[in-house]
Image 1: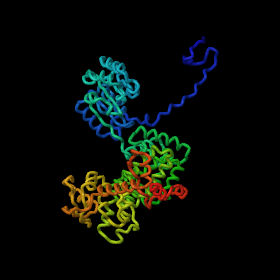
Image 2: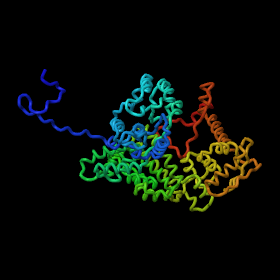
Image 3: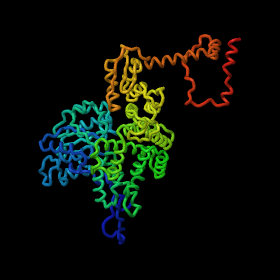
Image 4: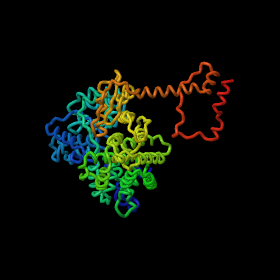
Length: 596
């Protein structure tokens, strides 16, 4: 063994042998990530939580501080940070050491410095995600029996409290309800619904909100300036949007962007941030929306390919398109948003112009189709192919008018208004056959000619508008006597509801913008739609049973019966291939065998 242990520091001055001690290389300071470096230390530093700060300040001013707090919110909005600020506010003694609880801790007293350094013995933090059992809670309960060592109040901070077991919650209840006067509890969770009601009722609850994009952008801009980082406003917006209301997530992304931009001499651009996040450039999303509303499938696929080659995820591209549909709907509903300074210039200018050219029904249909498409994308074997199929679908239904617009044009008359070839766009123009329109909207396909409005079209409109009871009774309980828009004459069966006439008139007036006359008659009228379809099905069944081939099968298999039959081939269905048709024996063969 030598003169000094391995862990002992070398003595100052020359050694026993006259040589100078070797100088130690200076150690580089450990890098602190932005989320820790700029963690709030006072209530004034908390951003986006004005209601929480105002309530706590008032509580300190009135000396009405609860014994237990429940902080809930998504990750990264400041739950644990708020708990630590509370601990300092409760134990601050001021620069002179004589102060009491204050909402503005000094940061220089011994208690403030120790809590900031996470080494105060009277501020205990427990992670309930890794300490879930009743024994862990019993240690806290045991510790509450002793007074603080050096602080005024002993503070227990339990993070992710919803992870505690049922037995642990039960063990905590009594202490949580009536703790000693020198004890405060601060509980934090991201899953408030998993916390028992018996625990919630013993706490003062605060819901920390997601931080708005504009607030995050301003905060990240201040930090970038403090760090001397040259970053474009567009890049800041991308990061703030991707943070999804979480300050910590946004600062982690900003750290990543700074590291990525270190190899560049200039600023961190919006394109660099979008590439890092796997996002499509915002301009690409607007271009894609333009192509979709114009029904330009080749252009939409080209934009999608360009975005994919730049690294954008197909699912995120559709999500951005869905978000843009929501933004355009807000522009349509609240036009003054075009003057708001909280939105980027691109969204204010292009968004307002695009929203003006679209209608609310079209935007609602676009939202629904994108939402369903994103659900389908999760099950698609190839996400890129699935996204392209969704875009093609959107382009092909872009020029379909809503059912009400079609009925309005048909009832108002005029060759140009009802022409199925008239061009139109998603704003409500354009004419299409009722057959194609109702099929696209999930309604019943009428058997009428393409330009003749029928009672079946009106019934299909009720189905397309999800008027389930009205749709069912129009099919089952309404005998059509006369149909001369805007007059409909019906005979109703006793099973029809009393408000059927009012509901039908309300639906047609809302869709067409004009009043309809729904008259009741005692004339027999036509069969109901369900009766007519039943007669047709029965006729098809009788024709099938009378076919020689069916008769031969029934003779060979006694007791067999026909359960259902498929309709005869229509002109829209594909023809039977010639090589298959050659294998089908002619009907005359069966007739000859039956006669023999």
